[in-house]
Amino acid sequence: MEMLLQTNGLCKAFGKQKAVDNVSLNVPEGKIYGLLGPNGAGKSTILKMITGILKPTSGEIYFDKRPWDRAALSEIGALIESPPIYENLSARENLKVRSLLIGADKKRIDEVLHTVALENTGKKKAGRFSLGMKQRLGIAMALLGEPRLLILDEPMNGLDPIGIDELRRLIRSFSAQGITVILSSHILSEVQLLADYAGIISGGVLGYEGALEHGENLEELFMKVIRESEGGGKNYV
Image 1: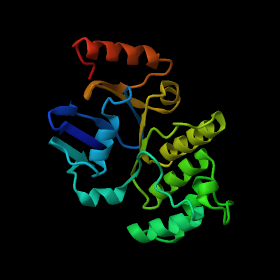
Image 2: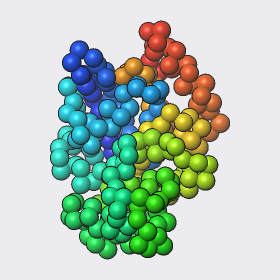
Image 3: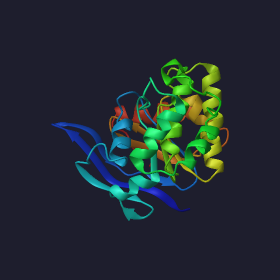
Image 4: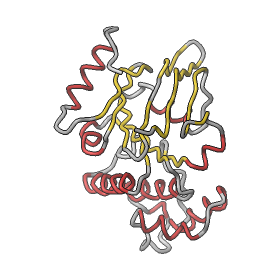
């Protein structure tokens, strides 16, 4: 199986505190990869290194078998933390601004609005959108550059059941289009429904990585890995 993204011994320290410790991920192309862990485990720090927001202390990142460089960002879309939207602008206006910033083709605006089901929001300002609509607009902005890899950091946070269902359907559609998705979350039930592969991080260390089998009890696996990590036990990588 071809790997679109790999990290080798990735580390990130803030002073004497190691937030990410020797993490080696293998993300298969065209699949949904669930990056799991408790709050503060290091998930967001890993994603910020992959997207160039943070520089690794040590280790390597490979995108499509090539050492990561800034050029790789043209093939990576990301929604990390809050969507970077202008609340006084409409969805279309937000996407126009974003397309100018990244040099995306303007025809992509209509395409991504349709993809995230925001094509009928008209002149409604984004500040009046529901949280789910704001998340979908953030994803639309991440899709403008036609990325091969889409990174979503805790996209379900704060959503009601309807918003979660809409986002779940949307994420499934990306995999069907051949887009590789890294879904970072601590909501195990959602990852169980969506992901093909999972990596479990605890205390900055990768304690498990592998395919998710149908019917596998992800919560049981998660808790086992976390307990092993806290107790200094073996990793399941």
